[in-house]
Amino acid sequence: MGLTRVYATDPALGVPEEDLGYFAFHFSASDVAVLGAEPKLMTSTILLPADASDELALRIAKGIDWEAYRYGVTVITGHTGRYESVKEPVVVTTVIGEVREPVTPKLARVGDRLLLVGIPGAELLYGIAHFNPTLLEERFGRRSVEKWRRARWMLTAVDSARDLVLFSRVNGMKDGAEGGLVRLLNDFADAAELGFTVNKDLIPFPPELLKLSREREFDPLAASSSGVVLAAIPSSLPLGFLKDLMESHGFVVRLIGELKKDRRELIVNGEVKEFPSSEEVRDPYPDLTQGS
Image (cartoon, rainbow, N blue to C red; front, side):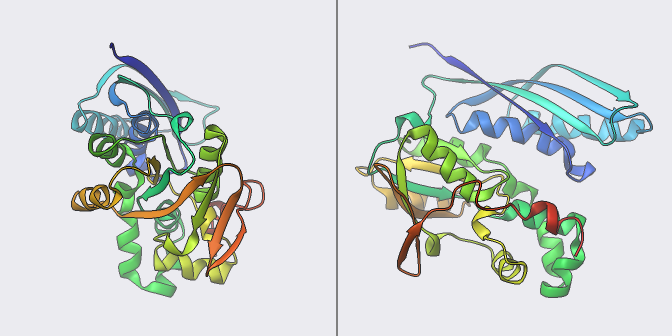
């Protein structure tokens, strides 16, 4: 059986300039990785404001190049330019991967267990630490700000998705982004044409996120969560062994629920509720990163 090529393209913008190259690589590479594919080739387009410095262009390019080198990806072509109509740096990348059989939610089955890998809401806390650090410092101290400023490594799915397909059979994966776990779970269920039951009390939300959600009255399930991976694992497989393997590689792993035939349910403190739709909740990222 030959290899299948898969493609993913994404823009990176609105992130700290020093990390723009990192995210330009990982946003697209993560989308390839959750298809069970190995990223192989990449293109990049770096669009800069007219007054952008050569140093900024070089910093972004070096960031992309370093991540591509780390993961054995070849940058085959690209473009860099300054434009009057561009108001902030924007980098668009396309990553091409190879896989024998793509892993998609279409493979998922009723009874598959839902495994969550990563830190929900880490993207939101990273953004606050960079763009509105006072919000964290006043509540949790300067150490919390410094911790989350350095949290970009949590915001990629490449490593965890690679390990999941290496260690286990996986009936579909999807990575998080804006809209948090609400969008992630609903999008996965839409693609699988199934329902699910998820226990909110089993989700490893950071304590900072939970406190902010109470103060600012938002649902932590909706917090931006790039880097989180949701995977459907067949019920016949030894989940405890898989969890131990993933944790030995440094990942936070939780069994949060299972796939059902149709209903989408959320368990909170033992009470079963209807899971919110993606339209019902608002991602707090824009509000909390633009000032208190």
